[in-house]
Image (cartoon, rainbow, N blue to C red; front, top):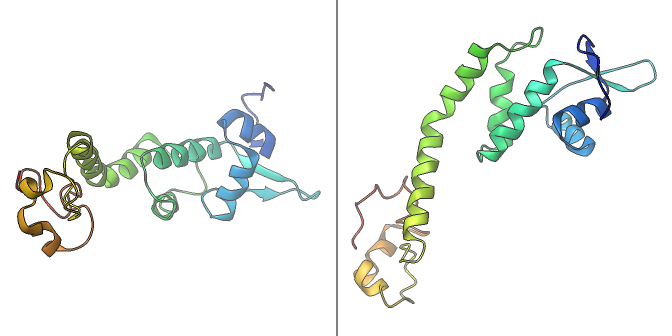
Length: 160
């Protein structure tokens, strides 16, 4: 691993990739999508400010949480461009996603708990479907897995 001097103001794309653990191609993709930015040297080489490390880490974490890149970009657009984001800046961003993450957690828990049971798809192919979804009641509510999606069916609201 190449040691980057602690007070280096800018990083090359290779240094950023090495420090962040993200492939150069992914950094180029993030830049093309407007998630990070760089300046170009006279030799047309990319240079990233050190705060880009935090932005890349934030993007990676948000992606792992299932947050779409468009939403990540919108969040990053609220951060200051002329200074390194503070702990408060990051706290505001994470707070804005809290209810969405809580909903995702609830959906994943329901998926885990109901994985071997009927998910309310209306297929009527499982023995239990006639018991868990009599007369395909859930099919009348619309397409998709009605019991798993918490936005469609609140917990404990399904037959069963």
